Image 1: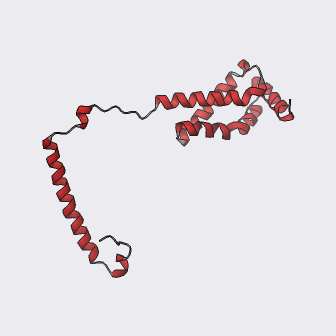
Image 2: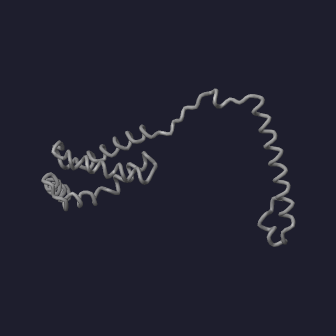
Image 3: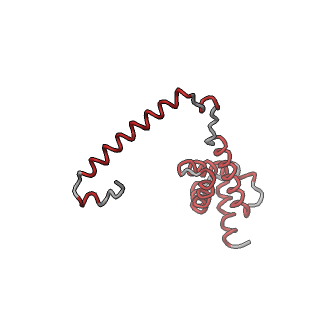
Length: 144
């Protein structure tokens, strides 16, 4: 066992007894990697941070179930991944839209034509106003 693994084993033994300083030390060692793992899955900074912190709470509360303390890092990462995937599935952006809501009738398309004509007239008026600008201001507006 390497000195680092031995040291984490001592810290985890202290965590089992509720030592908050040991928990903070373990948290400081692993939080960046666990945050990045969660962020890759949920793609939201705040959610990734919440998931990471919840995962640490879960890990500290279930530390008795971990048989080999040298496997703490992979075990914690598995907790973070599972929590992140669960969050992602609960909050996925799949919005089902009925086909009847998307289709429009011929009457609806008439409004689109009117909107297009109104937009074209307004765009022409804006271009005419831009032509009245001083030449040095027109340099920033080359498309008219």
